[in-house]
Figure 1 (cartoon, rainbow, N blue to C red):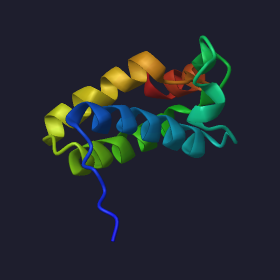
Figure 2: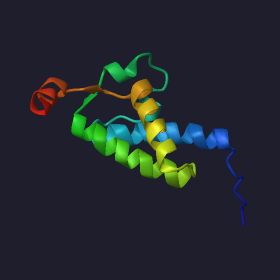
Figure 3: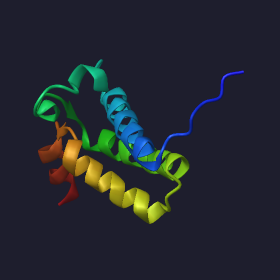
Length: 102
């Protein structure tokens, strides 16, 4: 039986970023993975998602981070806000979304 080496906290964080990026593309409906974009500069400007898809990703990511990184809800929400700021895709319906909010 092969024993699997446990990931360090840093390795878990790196894997979380990869998993979040892959899930972002799935939710946004793009047939792309982390491996496809990892060597491209500003790749996040080439793809879009709706505000609703971004909210779905945020909820998925919060649950993922709580389970896999063992962080509390507040920390997971902050991490997802940073993720969106750093790697989030452009919103395709931002103007339309804001018209309904006013």
